[in-house]
Length: 86
Ligand code: FES
Picture 1: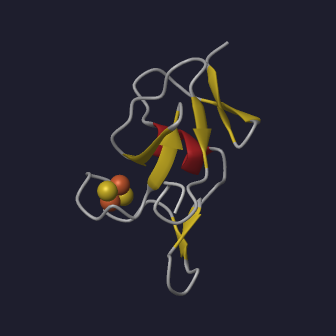
Picture 2: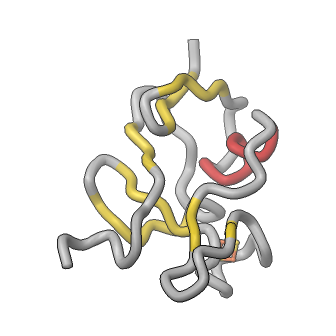
């Protein structure tokens, strides 16, 4: 089975999909919030330019979900703030 986890829940994906595409296909349209206004963010540009889609992947914050290839066993999580302990 091809799936990664998002906030501890399994997300299936098809070969070639990015993490962001798989999240949208799974019905999730936002997965982080802005620091100032807590506005929801997900895929906007889809090509790695806007940085709206930031997630933490296997403990690495600030990964762009629209660019990270989905892979079996990845641990993806919602990013809080900058993603660092500050
Ligand atoms: S959606 Fe714009 S960088 Fe990912």
